[in-house]
Amino acid sequence: MGKKFLLTAAILGCVLLAAGGMLRMTGGEIVTENKQSMQGALAGVRVCIDPGHGGYDGGAVGRDSGVKEKAVNLAWAKTLKAALEKEGAQVTLTRSEDVALAEEGKERKRRDLQERVDRAQNADIFLSLHMNEYPDRSQSGPQVFYTEGNEKGRLLAGALQESMNEALSPVRPRSAHKGDYYVLRHQQNACVLIECGFLSNEKEEALLMDAAYRERAAESILRGVAQYLRLRENLANGA
Image (cartoon, rainbow, N blue to C red):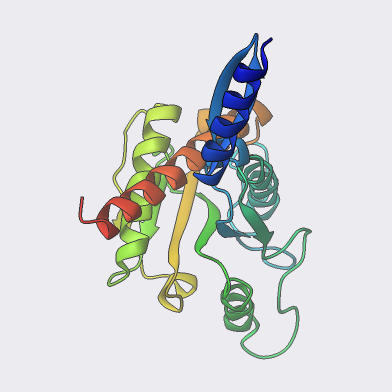
């Protein structure tokens, strides 16, 4: 390999690195990779995942298995955390074990919810995970909620709903909807509440406890978050 080629490659490499790219050699050919793709699509994004319920508050109960919602929420949160971290996100959980965030005293439920809000103060994105139930056992499918007046939450909810519908192929695809939830009303970040599916539906109850389905859902949420970030960037740039 001649000195002239090496000098040219070195100069080109400096230019590319200065522009924010990554450089590598493959069979004598210079290949560049965008720094963001190397680090992950969510590099630097701060996400707080809230596994709903916990401790004394079990939430909904699986109609056939008897599983408590709080346990399913936590399993989903841990799977989602791993998926988001692979793409560079900085992820925290409001709880990482089976506990309530306010176990005793007056108004413990309100104080529990406020603690979840407090733990998300530094997050760019807040995802509260829940499992649904309904007397009519035919009801199924994920649904994402946002609070009225929070435009970031509305955009995030729409992107997540579309991505989950596409990946999970529910019998009845739902649309993102306004929801009056404490953990959403008291935040200004991009916050949503995701009802991941129905523990009262026989088929979906089994799916919600299946590791492979949980991972597929986590990937769909990841794609929805990435789409939301693209939408926000386009809006900021006037696109």
